[in-house]
Image (cartoon, helix red, strand yellow):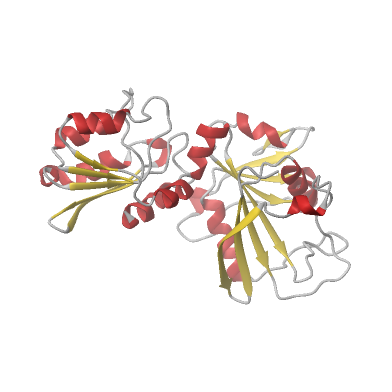
Length: 317
């Protein structure tokens, strides 16, 4: 399942409105088929893995990060039916599919075909891997990641607004990889007018994965950009399950105040700025409200800098 989770990451930011599923088929302790949901959502991971495995899939074990779909589509057959037709002997599933068109139906169809089914294997990791799709299903909006680069004293820019560059090249390369994992990237109007940012992916081999460019503005957007007037408008973005909020302290504060940030990327540079810009009001009425909102998921060194990844604790106010 670990291999299936890893391979499913290849599709992150490219598969909306479908989830970025990973699938590995094993027979006689050897991998005979691998698949991940491809750009635009098709083919599905299971279909790709079965095509690679061919007739060897009969009696094999299929590891998939999401319950195989059970609904018919003009774009392809149901994966549960494909697995049954291929004669796999066992299917191990990380997470059930919350899509009402499947939601247990895929598991039922596999069991009816005489296939042994095991569920909830590394489910927590699967939820994190497919957080964008799951956010759409549960909340009706994309998953939102907020990126902040800060000094040791918490400044995100100089007093005059200069922030290029707080972090070093390794941290900036990591940020570009994060861009490649999102369908859309958003900045505020002030950042757009002041910096004219490209917001593309400048990593060799990933240039074509540059996300759609969004600006938070009531005044429209220039060519090549899309404008949304309010943070909540991200719900109406078609084909977007992951949004990266990258520029402007006012924009960052607006998304935090609206409680629309699910994941926080905090890059810390070993510098002191003094009298720098920090986040404005994010709507906290009392210091106690700030506690218990975020949990640390990951932390690592990037050259001389450090990145910390925090996740929103759901159910907290």
